[in-house]
Image (cartoon, helix red, strand yellow):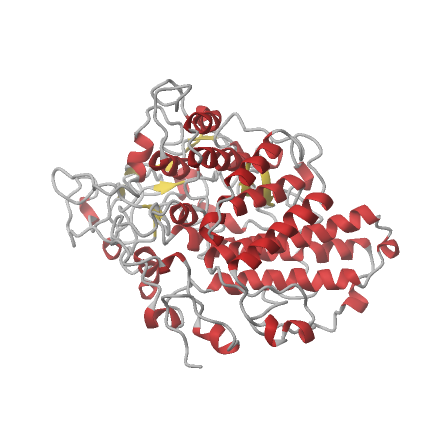
Length: 593
């Protein structure tokens, strides 16, 4: 949350877009004549340089969220009048239409942006790593152990970015230096095979980071939150192994199980599941033992994931005019971007459930009674809350004459688990505009909202103080469980999942627990559903669907894909033109060479 010595707003060796400004422009840019020869004067200068890429990567998480959630089945950006049309690019995400000429039109889509954002971070890491290679730690009164840990921070962040790239694009450049005389050589401007990149990531994490990063010291990270530890590197290895079969065609279930067990058993420090489902996301989550890695945040400094701008994650996952209800009206009006996909059609007066196996978020939660998350979100004090959703109904708003929130057009908002042009018919469920349930036909009644991170009152000291939890111990349990399930051991898998799930229900009986503790059967379909419940809106759904072989299926307002090429994103025309050695991903049009 409040780590102060890392994110100090330094613009030292590169801007947010520096270090690697494109896929081919690898030369170091000097800003205001600040170079490695005169920048590094003190130990603090070294620390600031090491953690500069962390700030950039934290900022970039909005793009990770777009790539993981908008092409998937649980979250959607629907058009609400003239809000969130933006040339139809969010609809293209949802329907897997990010191919053809559209992906080259400026502003038509952002499915190529993660390539640029991650390589910018990699460029920043490489630049500082090359600088440190020329410096003597004794000059700054830094021990060899500390120096090695600083280098490990950078190499772990670089591996984190390469994990994102192999996931999204598979066929990537492998750049490990800021020296243009090396990186601009033809052999280094060509994409490497996925296995080469996979093995590089594995070696960095396993052979260097696990050795040189510190273990967690104590029960939680506290003021050290925001830095990589051995546990975080191990959890990234688990992500790598979990997806190995899809990424390189080789299952690594046993390797994945072993690294998960090592994390759970405390080899890399103390990690423990929180007693409350919301603790890993709460305002003081730097004291939560479940959080393995988080980007530090504070309302007074940076809180990228909770800002009220388009380039955010959770700040625009709230319904319009909910500010007075939450006590956050001093931070501007809400602009609802992400809602859950609807479970009901627009039949009137008796709406019907859709029959899709994917999506259906409300029904997946309602499958099991007494879920503490599937309750109306409510702040119970300045720093406590209950519930995780804005459910069906009106939004209390004491600034309006009738006491409820109104749309920009003036009708009272009544949130519905549907998408349609209800307008004034929100409460009755009667469509007064276009009745077809599709992305283009939303209004301010359309969709329910997830409140994963708490939005406590503006006054009170806890507003936007939650760190952005990128890795938590629950993921380790779920990862290990999936591996056991794929190996045919549903009972061990079920027990692992139950250890996390029991905190999510007010009454965790045998009608909710998986066998052997309960009567519920765990199979692959249920495993995917459970990933969706536990990690709803945590920027991972696309990856899970692809790993389960379900990404091509139909869901609400999205037809089944004709083939699998949408599992990867295309490279942009600019990227291809800047580096003629790059090859377009299969299924997308290449440039003339």
